[in-house]
Amino acid sequence: MGDKMATLTIDGNELQLPVYNGSEGPSVMDISSLYKDSGYFTYDPGFLSTASCESSITFIDGEKGILRYRGYDIDELAENCDYLSTCHLLLYGELPDAAQKEWFDRKMTLHTMAHEQLQFMMRGFPRRAHPMAIMVGAAASLSAFYHDSLDINDPEQRELAAFRMIAKMPTIAAMCYKYSIGQPFVYPDNDLGFAENFLHMMFATPCEKYKVSPILADAMDKILILHADHEQNASTSTVRLAGSSGANPFACVGAGIASLWGPAHGGANEAVINMLEEIENVKNIPEFIERAKDKNDPFRLMGFGHRVYKNYDPRAKVLRQTCKQVLEELGIKDEPLLDIAVELEKIALEDEYFVERKLYPNVDFYSGIIYKAMGIPASMYTVLFAIARTSGWVAQWKEMIEDPKQKIGRPRQLFTGPEGRHLDGSVIRKTA
Ligand code: ACO
Image (cartoon, rainbow, N blue to C red):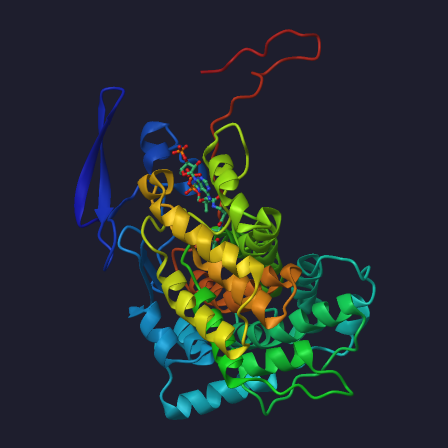
């Protein structure tokens, strides 16, 4: 039973609903037997008030602007840890000690190479294909190559699948990019760190080495940490829902990538740059601000607002600083899009419409700008998000599979279609 009971009165009957307290955050009412006891479903489009699972990985308090992985504040992790340590934390619940770090980093490094056959699958795509379209297919296709890590009931195979998924994502992502620009694929270099290796595979060619700047590698690593997990967001919930049927983890991550692609989710960082380009000049900003406020205009300021954060996105705070460091390192001073971004942020933070609705810049606002400065094309931005989020998807998938209370996800509905009818137009009589 719960920590206390809530009483629901319906049709003259009193129902007792157990209430559970988590370690932090709002308590939940257990409505799992509501239908059995009352014949009613609950209705909550967009899951505004519904906890879909129990989880001990990530905690968010959107009102206070808090994001924690396994209890640690995101800014403390971004400042003191690297991405692979963060992956260890997400997967196993603790940061690695020195021996665990050596073991984990080595394991991850050993799995960076993609199956040689994968490139032939890639070559089947049109060169103009959006990299996210290729990523959806390529991630799911790992299930066709790695048959020895598909048994979700075997903990060792689950772990192997987790290593493969996280370690191969940067390789696959860089392959998507190289393919789109007609350059040969670059193999991973296992002497390099995780973020460094990704930049190497993106920008080196067989004839030209690419010296990765430590500041850019560090910025990329921070971006990966900041995007690694975000509790039950749309793509993570998609991974969990897909996995709840017992589907293999590679296919589930493919489903997560599809969900991430949308502009209301991971596609926003690409949409930010497209928007800045559309604004074109600082003097046009007021016109776009007015459009964003106009209910009859579908235009929204991309990179502003968040379903959960009604305060400054804590990830945006870290990236704002990183953004400055990257621009300094690259010696970028006169970039019109950045001038527009800075001015837009200033105006939106002061404008009553945005202040009233607590629409602050989100993480995508700054990540898009950093990628642009690094020379990464806009179509790759969501792909980078997918690389980072893979650790969160895999950790959440693993937690779900290991949860004894796990059931296949099967939401209910409020049906508003036609009542039962026969082909001759007569109505099907309702049975009691
Ligand atoms: N520009 C202008 N108005 C906005 C914006 C925006 N970016 N975001 C929200 N609003 C307004 C809405 O019109 C609404 O106004 P109203 O109360 O007068 O009707 C109010 O603010 C609340 O908006 P909702 O749509 O109810 O908020 P919701 O939580 O459903 O949406 C979302 C969150 C989808 C992120 C939204 O803010 C948005 O579309 N932002 C732009 C896209 C974006 O940056 N997405 C990235 C999210 S971060 C991530 O996925 C990592």
